[in-house]
Structure formats: C-alpha cells, structure tokens
Image 1: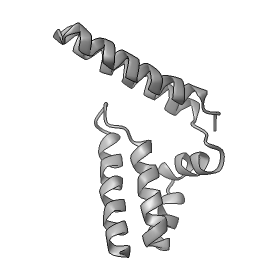
Image 2 (image 1 turned 90 degrees about the vertical axis):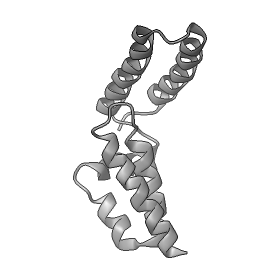
Image 3 (image 1 turned 180 degrees about the vertical axis):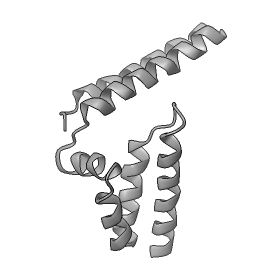
Image 4 (image 1 turned 135 degrees about the horizontal axis):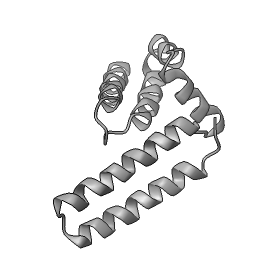
Length: 117
C-alpha cells in the first residue's frame, strides 16, 4: 500500500511542478495532495517536500494555519481573470461564461477568505 501512496504522491508532485509552468493548472492543491500521500508512504519524501525551499512554506502554512500567502492570492486572482478572459475573447457561449464566472468567483471567495501566511 505504501508504494501506491508514494506513486500517487509522485503523480501529484508532477502535476504541481507542471502547474508552475502551465498558467491554468493549479500548483498548491496538487502539492497538498502530494504531501498527504507522502505522509502515508514515505517519511523521507514527506520531510523533503516540507523542507523544500519553494514548496515547503506553502504546505506548512496551509497545514498549520489554513493560510495562503498574499503572493499566491494575487497570482491566483490573475490566473482566474485570464481563465475568464480567454474564453470570452474566443467566443464561448454566454451560458458557459456565466457558469465559469460563478464557479471561479466561489474559488476566489474561498482564496481571499483564508488568512494570510
């Protein structure tokens, strides 16, 4: 079972790394999932992820305080704005734009309601 958790954690870590380069792919949720999987499979991988100079602070802030840093909030807001603007310029059906706006507004509300790291 530990190998399944470790493999799943590596998969989520790969998605998180891809999310640092792909604008609409989230990074932090995949990091949190990877950390959770590593906690169940490998203390070494879990410790490595928590002590990582870039990703570690994001994970520990969320685990300890449920906090999201201001920089992450701003970047998320800009990414969500881009995710709304591109379909609008491409000419996606208005009903889809409305649904997308409602869902992404709820995401923004959640992000900005979290305490700051």
